[in-house]
Image (cartoon, rainbow, N blue to C red):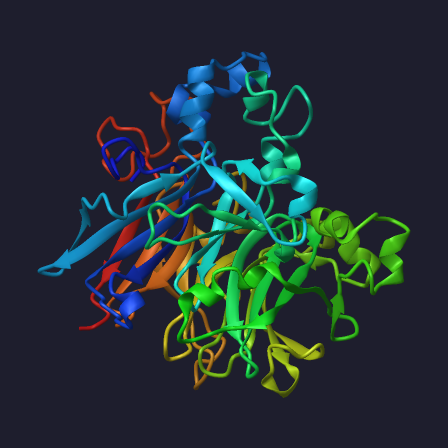
Length: 474
């Protein structure tokens, strides 16, 4: 949880979102379900609980100190650390060969089609929302709401630029690839996957061994994307796959015509009048996608691939501008069940609302039986109020995708006050489900009057944390 040490010099970050488990013996072909690495994203800081920087301070324009900004920069990014399950209980494990924090100060290499425009390195990663694992054993972290840090030259939500003047906004909004098994490896921003408010990345391998990455832009009236690698995935040579996401073609979903539309400056005349190069197209995906026919969607968040039939499930969280208040889950079926196909069919698999019992689906994950696990995110300002009152606190649901109960949502767990339930990832044997509890007590105005004291209770501040739900094997 927030404030725990992960090594001698670094601490677990704030507002954990994605959480995923990798067996410690993965690179040797193993699937150890009691000893592995947890990889956790940290989406944004809490100025209140990190620095006692209140809403009143913000409204009055109080400038943070360098020390306060640095504390917040250390609280975002990616935590990697080892965990072990002994006698049924999961525990943090001190291991200097793996445990590390990648934060807003870490040097990150810029790779892919936009690297010549952006420079060789970026300073740090931030706004790390969800993510995903690759078949070659690396982690993909998604930079989402980077605009909260870089709204204008002098003012942004977290006010970092009061003391940090050299930030380059185009360095953020990418997918960051990390090798969790090599502590000395340099993280890389994969610019060929496009720049937008990334929620996550779901990787599939086609029949031709191409890596196919599905992604969503988490903003109202934004799009769903797919990247197809040029090079083929090599099952026997991990090193050969380490830069496979740097070369390929990026597409945007056209739900009107059931097609994937290519985003390529040299091949699409529509892009030449608005942009100067493929790098320019990638930096500005939110604009370039519309020019080639990308469909404006209702906040596409997590995307996952059903292990049973390889269809693609997308959480559309909501869009009040289109009077979609509770969101839905949409299923894409690629033509001939081929991830490389440029044509698809789609259907609404489940609709949020009072009748279904859930609202605002966000993160998704599957178990091996094809059950879809859905973590919801009704915003704190609306939670337990008005039309959302019947849903209570944000919760975790299980929805079967086959059988008599197909499409029916079963509430499995409820989160603490004002939190977002997110993450969601099983161990290989599916005996444990790891879940993140993000921003409990988010509506607090002062530490003394915190609206939640989870998980330590008493007089402690609320702390975002990862929980392990066990007992599935029994």
